[in-house]
Length: 411
Image 1 (cartoon, rainbow, N blue to C red):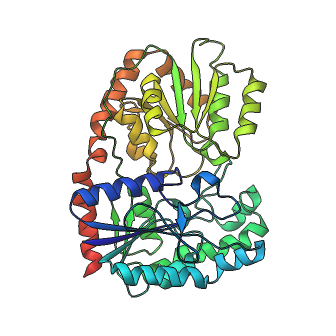
Image 2 (image 1 turned 180 degrees about the horizontal axis):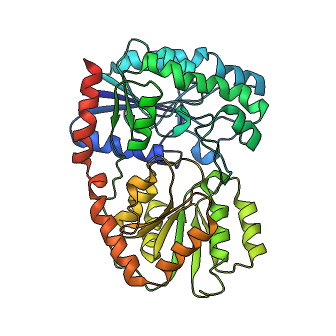
């Protein structure tokens, strides 16, 4: 089968769960004998670092990388208002490039992933093709899934989001068009939807989406081996250092343990807009046991996971099926996670880790204390998680669920 993956970002240049999934899925499909191509977007020129600039440019606006079958569209320079118009209306250059790619590749199925930057243009260009879309987050349903409040506005009206400050009127002017595209236009172009969590699948069906299949995410970790829980009392966070990920809640909870557990430490892997605020908060709490490790390579992460007693996902926003939970289980680590979105499907409370209510500082502190003071409990939960989520690391099992969705869309 010939498959074209379409995504907002280049998986070779952007570190994110969706992009990791696309790379892993491509590897699994190609190993199974399928012909996989990519059409992805480069970062906006204003925020693209030299490390992510393509090797060479050929056609205007298009960058070709060494990976066979990969085509990267680079948005041309534009002022703020032109950029907004491109996002909320139509971007002719992108439409021509995607149409040309579709003609050249002639895919049996187009697998659409994130489509936030130019939703109308992407959807319009794919009309007439068989399209499957993986819905990677809850933004197709709610006014905003990025609420940083303890009482999230997810699932409520857009006015609740405005009252909380999650949206501003200026942002809403742009986001309203994107929400319209995600809620209504997708259904007119996409033949089948994939939800990585059962929770999201149920919500999509309630919103009127048809042909929704639950296909859990795949994470290829060929060198992952479960290891006993270490003696060191290390709690690990891996992800973006941004408000909606709940890292501030994690710092506050850890601060309540620091006095009674002087040997315990908190390691934060990742970067983001809130990094300076979080560093300042750590200083304010007097937390000398907190280490900001920045971005780390996959090889470095292997060693970091093995040194951790547990992994924490303290999200305030609705997580769908984060790959960090799968990675943690692969290395036999207990997981402490907020009870939101699809996380309860990945963490069995009391058996493979612990769940706590979103934003509950005391609840999180209690669960961290249990695992940091009981090495045997952490080891037992990590081993149970490793066995329970083994299927999510199997490319064969993943393709058994995914390929029928492709076939259904083709008929």
